[in-house]
Image 1: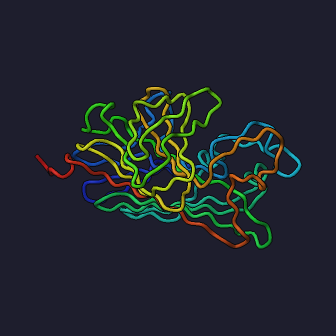
Image 2 (image 1 turned 135 degrees about the vertical axis):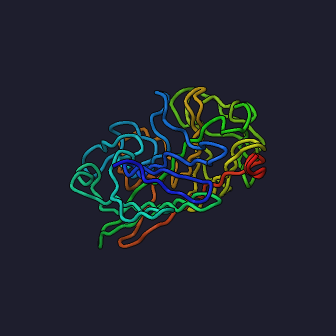
Image 3 (image 1 turned 180 degrees about the vertical axis):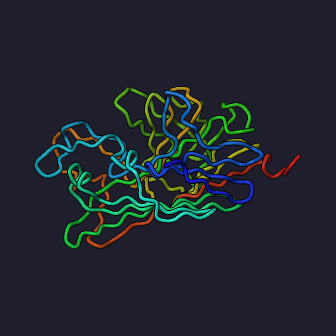
Length: 292
């Protein structure tokens, strides 16, 4: 199945059922905001991450009596979600546990992803539910939207800034094994072109629930609720930047541990659910000027 196409006023969005992935958010006059996976630097656009975020060293995380063998970011990015509903401006998708998922991850789950487009922006709602009557569901959930960098009509890449709504720690936490220095900033404004993106950079226990990326000419605001962690990622100097709200931050482990006992893992009691929300709002002088 091809992409699900949504329309509201001057905005259009495209969603792929595989991965419940946002692959386009385009303003008719300004252009495309989402990375189009057009090079080998990264062949994705904005996958949903579940039931793990990032990855753990192979063989050190256990599911029962066997090592966990899941791809980085889990199986959701490559899974075909069921399309439950489509309208001109919204869609609802769902992924549920199956014999295939249970063979790799022995917990029942339901993961639904809703998209709603209006004249001002796009809302994405993610819901995890534990349908089991007896067993707790351990999981991690993340969003991974990649934005064109530079954004359309925004000016040069080096002029782009990230503005956090609240004061954050004054340095990032490099998340990979490479010896990359932390990026230091004033806690509010990040210059992404100054970051060494040999690895992802985390902002653990983020205070903000909103971040704006771009320039005065064109920017996009990403609002997020229900996520407590945040990461920034690109690949070297590739022309995209990922802004990633996560439920949990992967922790360093050096000896075998059960996945359900890790401190960097969320847990849902039997029958419980959790909802997280993203909101993408394009803005800037280019949009305010209206048709020329």
